Image (cartoon, rainbow, N blue to C red; front, side, top):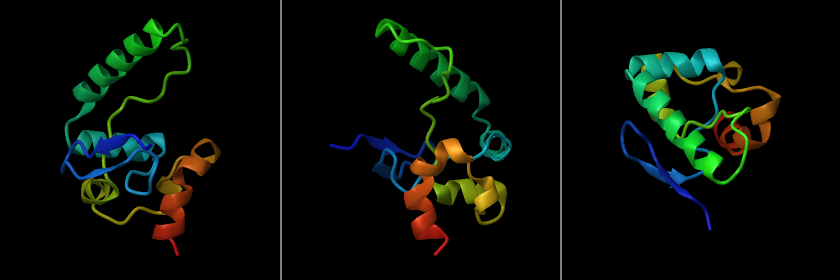
Length: 106
């Protein structure tokens, strides 16, 4: 069973890891977060997630997932353009972004 997510902007529902919310590189992601003034929300979400995984006894050393989801349509609105391959996170996100790339760039 897939975890359901909602875009924090438009409330569109999608499955975690599907092609609706690609992983962006840091620079592009920050532009989107700044456009929607979500920096504080992102920090709060990161702290809550860190607390959650600490309770499970896991390390927060490599914590990256802030549980802030934005669909690609809202990302493009923030960027003022279509998403391009160079906007996507590199090798680390390749598996996560595969469905998006297959659908979007073909």
